[in-house]
Image (cartoon, rainbow, N blue to C red; front, top):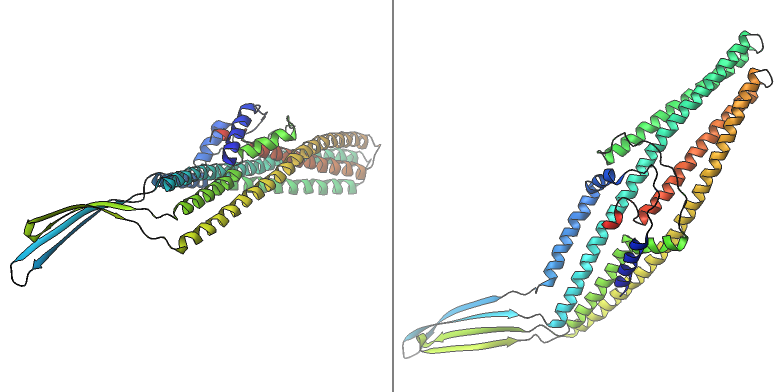
Length: 409
């Protein structure tokens, strides 16, 4: 019943899900081949096919026909010898209750296979998003370093003009060059970080090209927390795996309970005796006599089923807690990015005003360099806030199966 409820909830959630805003996100046409060709997803797909084969075998009876043939020679003390033989065909029959339990186990296996495949697809999608955002962030940090380096060069140019005009000491020029060297070092670090991030991304997803290097724009959540909770719970493959395992355990308990009554074996046989003078035809029925072990297995299976049910409930509670944390993170990260952007713009304006003031002799060099450092720090903080907000938002969309056609899998 819980599995049916989750399926109905998922169907309703998919129908009611709005199309999210995804500015700058990797397009689905690019992502789907990357995911489908990934070794982890391919392995899960192969595992799903294996599980489907197992489920198909459970649908059929595990018993096969058995043919028996024996021959013998009868010798009388005072008489001739006769050749005799007998042949039979028999098969054990699976009782209806056991067949029904096996079908339930097969259905649970199919659910588990699909859920594990979806789980691998989701984890790979999250990994792709994380590595791509790391690379895009590093590329934008490299571009930001170039802007900061250009600003430091402009500061040095202004200082040199004042030194030549006799309005500033040569020490000011030395300090400005040292500041420029620091920005050059930071630029080199940013270049190295970008190369490392791309190397990792390209090794994991070699088909991705440099074309998509822009950091996507964060977007505020356009739905209330209950929507995201219901949606993610309905689409959670991790929860579906736990539910499938619980359903399978309960079906196995039903199977063990039904197995307390042994399956009968029926057959036909025929025999020839006394050299063919006697013909025998008959029907055979055999039933094992059940022992105490069958009842013991039933009790053990019931405990396993209860444990799996409790594990499902625990997984659901843990997931609800994680969803709440993810929603709060996405909201907070977006607000943090907005604040960071405002702060970076203010610091950049202050640095520009301080540069003009220094060029007019209205401010000292230390104030100019401090303003430039503050602007650089604020710009880097704003960029980090943007990357964090984008990561939180798009991870939420992946968990909710609202991007990259995740819901269709």
